[in-house]
Image (cartoon, rainbow over all chains, first blue to last red; front, side):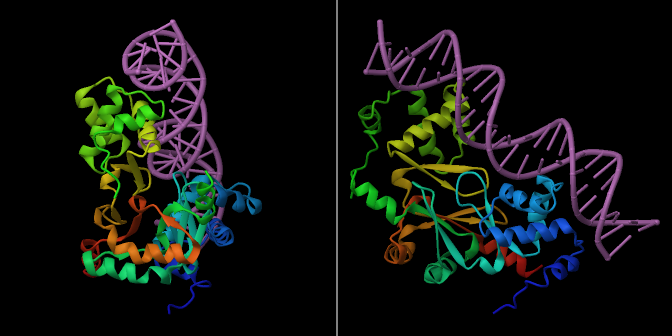
Length: 146
Length: 146
DNA sequence: CTGACTGCAAAAGGTTTGCAAAAAG
DNA sequence: CTTTTTGCAAACCTTTTGCAGTCAG
């Protein structure tokens, strides 16, 4: 529905008074490349091109990119949040508590549920941010043979 | 379905070779009292009775209590998991990204969605652990007047 | 008694901040 | 030239760990 913003991310930044820097470009590229990257992982990718970039710059950049709506993050585990591009955000993370595997499913599956939440309590779900914890099919099978 | 284990939590511990200590009793009581307590908050409550109890004891105890299935936790924010008794686990947390407010809704609302996940990818959801991020009705209203 | 549990202090992991130098517009 | 952004180092916060003493069974 919404236009792909792939080539106008810099415009989005500028609109809000932010400046375009190589670091921001690299961080965004890394987020896109990794799909589910933690700040640390993003840094590593960025440093392949620009070794001097600092972790705090990554954090600050991720914050800015989120603010202008180019990326989102989801908490899929205990430690590190993961970031992805907004266009990739239309899926839901299923996190296995046992093996840690993350499965993605189409967000359409959750639509009735999301509508129910809106109707019931007026809650507007951030779809790209949803992560469901539980047990994946593999680990269930394993548990059966316990 | 399952019998309430309220008065046999100590038996559950003993079955697994764990010992019953005042600290564990107090931590469990604090979890029940707080409903959605973070480790720090739980510590505070415990210290009302036993001031010498250490934070690390709280962490270790929470781990044990989870392992025997007396409590669960959910990640509702960045840094702070919250813990609740298993009997209280049949609700879903809606976390507002803006004001941080946590709304609870009955897990029944999610049943079709949970079944869809089971059917689609064989994923068994840990219902008490589900937290959905988004924007609560209040913050949406506020945003409209921006 | 004996092994599990606790308190303490230190370490570890992740994120944030202050500041002066560097870069964008 | 002005203001934002960056790199660095240090601070911070939450959680984990090692260890010796303590306590439950």
